[in-house]
Image 1 (cartoon, rainbow, N blue to C red):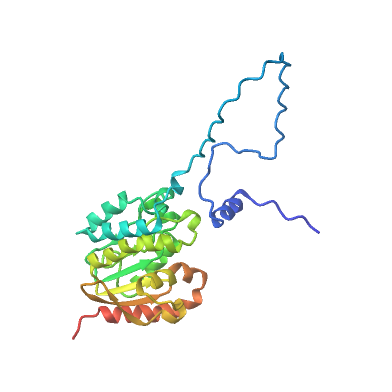
Image 2: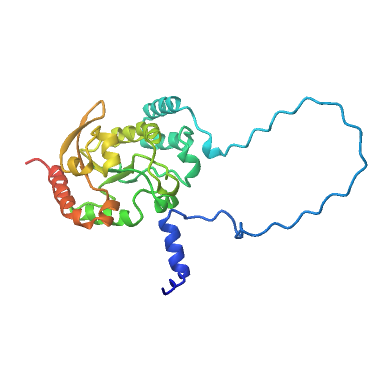
Length: 274
């Protein structure tokens, strides 16, 4: 058999990025297979009298990384609900989220990804969680999927000046992993309050996780997309519809046709009544 060609540096970097490796842990590489240098044996010492027995010292507690210091789940959820409820404006809500420590994702993320767009827009799009590009810039949907979302909303005459964009989870999960149910429940009060403060006429959930979290359905996105549902803020009922997440469309472009149908339904709902 012919040996496989040695990958180029560009191919290796692409592989690492696809695997979720997007930062280095040290400036110098470590050869973990290198044999350690032999330690010289200590010189023989004169025998000494045995010391008197002492009470053994307690074992030192291992240091716990900050990212693993978490609040009890129920307490964190209750704290998030109380904090979100007391935010009178979007600016206040963002400030509360900046200081909230009940979600461990905050300690592994680079930035809070709060929102982008026009807070007075009639339509609000909500995805699941930020990715690497969003974590760097602090804005939702700025990577490849964000560029596709821009083209999607442009097809019905919208842009980021006439739409509002956010995520259920405002901090990037490490390696773009799926958020846990606990992380979703802790962050849910913040996005619910965000929707209430923006008060759009149409709410669009992008993908299965945000649809299930916000619209209370257990159906998959194939069944739930394209259907109009009611989203109750407690003070008003908003028309809501689910469609595919742009990241999914990048992997499965054949579903763009169905997404176009959903976008046309959204455009029709935004038309003024005649």
